[in-house]
Length: 201
Image 1 (cartoon, rainbow, N blue to C red):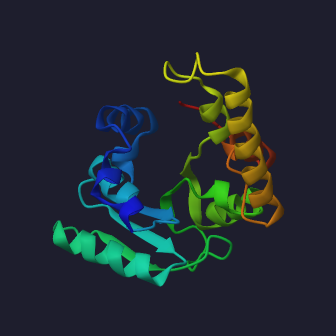
Image 2: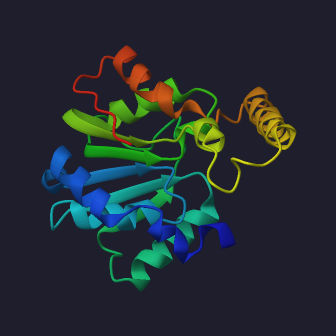
């Protein structure tokens, strides 16, 4: 619960979100879905960049997170525009072609088959709509040696990398996703027939 505290609202820089909104035309979005919404952090950051009357729906498989997301939306006066319900990313509980925008962030790294989830997201997205997929490559991030790590003993760094790879490969072997799938997502999108694929970092 502490991991999902209020500080997580600041994971996304508002200047960056505003720039992405302009580039992607998010101001034209009237109905959006966030897959794997957790307690609603990303939805609350995204909503101000959508059309003024836009509604954003969120699904999550954890009932406690759904209730908490709804409660947080109510506390900030957005209960009518942010709606949350139980749902699985592999079987999204909405009809075909409902949403102008379907988004997720740090979700595809936790599923055994990201392409299957992306197909589901496409199914509920209107023709000409937008998939907005925010996924990391945690391996690349971990290997970016900042000023605090650069001069550490090489064996220490190797031990850290070995530990990370062991955990990540174990997670994947258990069917719980790949923490470094982010860089693969654009290729998966092309495989699934999407056009106008853009990558921003």
